[in-house]
Image (cartoon, rainbow over all chains, first blue to last red; front, side, top):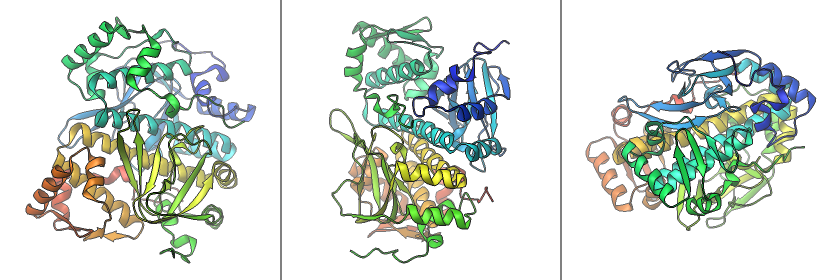
Length: 250
Length: 250
């Protein structure tokens, strides 16, 4: 399986594009990132990238494809926590833990670079700027989980969906995979339902409502913003928690 | 207002006790932490420590007292995200962002050390081990928000309360503020209700149920575990996401 982004110079990779929102990457930073980005692995759909309970302290940088992180509860039900797109870490949250506290599985075939805890510590010692960039990425991941918590606690099903589609759009745009008109999206209604705490029937109804209001359409694997500003207002979407206005660290 | 933990050597501070769960702190690490821990400020109840929207890139390390972090939604409602206890960072999530994405307010009078973004970057450059320890702390904060997401999505009100009281107990024990029998807790039923997505009446009923089952009592500002193991089983509490079994980094 050929990697879609293979051969891109490191500074044009989704990984560098994303971290550039926080830090102006120096030649040293890029060289260290290039090392981290080298040990590529391929995961077909159905093969977990990270297992809850694993103890080998490993994370990945997603080079191409989509993944989702989820928790399995003691009685066997699952809760999707978030989706990952190119440039995102997989398993960053628990790479420093004795035991991984969540699972990551591919939604489409995934190319990802393996980063061990040892690699990460060595990289931080070489360039503390990159350490802060990784802390920034972790903070942004946490900010997204907080938004999802607010979703479940305080937003209606339709606002929740609108907010989610806007967030995903902003994240994809940062790594060059979408624009203000929309983006390609491989997520099924089943996955959306699980992530947003809705039933599949409810997802269907909410998407129809947003389409009929002329705000956004999600059909045939493409999200199309029909009225971007109207959708932002409807969802109460304030993207400052994604912190895309950088770089702050020069 | 005298600080309860004033005069403790840095290695016995809640800050060091907490990070010691991840890293065996060297003399250099402790010296850098001591600098970070120096610029102490006092916040009475009712004065925000961090405001959503502020742009001065500042965080704090909580030395004594309790705080809570929350989001204000566009229409003015609020959602509590988490509570902070001594040793925790306040505002870590957005110290690297252009704009703070949340608020932090004291629940009791708070003594906290101001840490600017510049301090943090300088500390990381001096000891990358501390950078990884801060990333660990951020990852653990995220893991807790994920558990709260699972709470809202998948746990009953009673399981949610049980899980929350156990998590808080484990966090407090790590910094020497509780044991297997219980802990002092200044949280009102109103705060618990907001954090757990319940009404105050519901909180009252759920606490009565846990008490009548002989599992845990929360009365007069003290949480008492009547049957710790029974409560763990009831809540499906697997504390590996708190990663207290360290240190991993020697």
